Amino acid sequence: MAITPITKKREYYSDLDKALTLNPVTNDVARKINENAVKESITNLILTNRGDRPFQPELGCDIRSQLFESITQDTLDTIKIMISETLDAYEPRADILGIDVGGRIDSNELSVTITFVVINSDEPTTLEIILNRIR
Image (cartoon, rainbow, N blue to C red):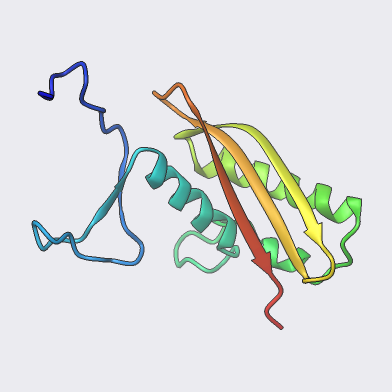
C-alpha cells in the first residue's frame, strides 16, 4: 500500500524519549510522537514535585505530599484537584476528559487514570499511573 497524504498519520507533537534510547536507523536519540509524547509529558508533570526544576519552581504536581496521608475520599478529591490544576496550567496539548483516582489500601498504592484527547486528534487516550509510597 502506498503512503499518500491521506493515509499517512500526521505528526503534530514530538518529544525526546526520556530514557534517551537510540534510534537504530539514524543512531540519534529516539523520539515520541503525538499521543505518546503527551502521555510522557503528563506522567512527568504528575511525578514532579514543585521546586524540583531549577528556574521553574511552580512546575509540578506535588502529589507526593498526599501519598502519606490516610486514603479517604477527601484525600482522593484533593489529589484529583491537584492533578487537574497542574494539567490545565502546564499541558496545553491535552484536553482532559476525566480524572479517576482510586486507592489500593492493602498495597499502599494510588491508581490515577486520566482520559484525554490530544489536540488535533479525534480519539480519546487513557493513561494509567500507579503511585507508590516509597518509605
